[in-house]
Length: 441
Image (cartoon, rainbow, N blue to C red):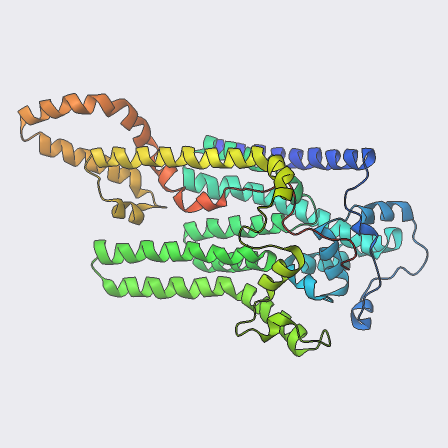
């Protein structure tokens, strides 16, 4: 426990170091090169007088206009959208591709924490500064959750959890965690939700995972963890406890929690439908409004950014694929390596009379895996002790795999417990998925 706590402090320091290093590099490159995206200069007034009236306007001249201009100029790509939404709300159809948690937090921070800075640097720079501070602090908490909460709980190995946390702090997509993007908030809510889920606090887990769906659209996919948990509990109830009624309760509970995780995504789509299709945001009814099942998010991704199944696979995108090839290669190699290790675990368990893969499902995420393997081996030994001759013949075959099995047996849970989290492996391209085009706003 003391070792884990010591490593937790070290993880926090490394996470802080990674942010300072990254921000220094960002400032250095901004001084040496002109930004590729020039959307920061697009800053028209809010369309609605109601939202414009809520701005924090300085009473006199701005004291440090150059600092404010530098901060405002740093807002590029998707950050322009988030700052604009925090300032003016959802004015345009394409803004509904960006979920509300980050803009809402930015708006609250600018009004209640950083409001004294408005007379010094201006309101829009304060919004941008709020986004930067919020995301970097959220990243620090996410790194601690990743190590001291989730990784230690799943892997049962502080050293391995520490290495995973360091890789998380210095991952190739780390720049998004310190920019005005949703990665930091999403990581914090998702990792926190998964920790509470596998700790048994299902209500807190449900709230945090639902909150992750308010940050990013793929947060709705976190409902799959409740489905996995429901299958696990249903198996235990039917096969082990012989009580089908408990399985029904587990499935109903899993479905209900999964629906709750989906609620933010569905609610935001309904909000967009109400404003655009029913509220008359434009004079012409949009095509997706006429669909039998209106799909606002899918339409926006396809219409404005050309996002769709395999639509990114074009010859003109070859430079981006080459740029992303190092992390893609690392991710593919990691998955193959993990699959090989998992296969070794299953094969070793089979060799020692633990040949039911369905039973592994009931043990995933618990402390019973190592105990089950040990009990299985003890059971095999007690049976073979009845016949001394048979035991001697089997012993010759067992000796060949003893060394490898003992290594795997010491940490079978490390591989098996990690199975539900294979989807968390970060695979990012070199550029954001949704590019901001000049003149959109």
